[in-house]
Image (cartoon, rainbow, N blue to C red):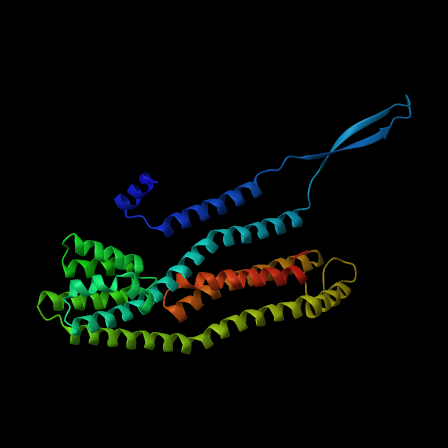
Length: 327
């Protein structure tokens, strides 16, 4: 455990780096195992020899059908992709939710800090007072509690107000908190730290967060459009697979007249519903992955936030494909 912490500090590694590495390694191992030549299955065949009346056994090698092997490989790749991106998407989702909670509680922290400054406490004493368990329970600062306890300990060691706020902002890893913490630190260095500065920062941060929530709410409809487009694509493929394409193939096979070439000049052997189904399955999976990435970029401004949508769309697409595409 100590060695792992040293690696974190020395190479500036993050938790998500290990998650990505382990997930990708697991996906690569899964694909490698699936494409390795499996042991040949043998089945004993009993043959009767008329000359001497003996019974002999011969081992026959059973080779799987190429189409079935191809389908199995496609499904293995889908599972490998899900294994590679699902843990990271969960980590990104939880980190994003944790950051938003930090931001909400940091607003409460600033409001409480301004009230204590108005009551006559100095900034360091106000932080120690906020870090007390009784006040935390009243102000619902559970997520910030460990960071406030650390800040109170630093104050006890003689760390300045500027360093305490800067250290807290760095640990919270929120761009918004870092921005307003920087303003507060600069005001403190100029000797202008007071109730009005803290209160104004809290109000401005709260309004900024409100605008972010309104923007996310306005972009939700685009997310619904992306999900609807995926289901429309699946519906069209279902109609093509069950009604239109079988009728077209029957007409083309009938026009061939048993000569192996259709009336359109296409070899009838090249027309196979299995190939169409495989292609449709690829289209559904690729579109699901890409649509999720686009959804994350549109709604949250970063493509990595769309991986959770990719996972959801791929699982839904694969589950529906099991019903009418994958045999």
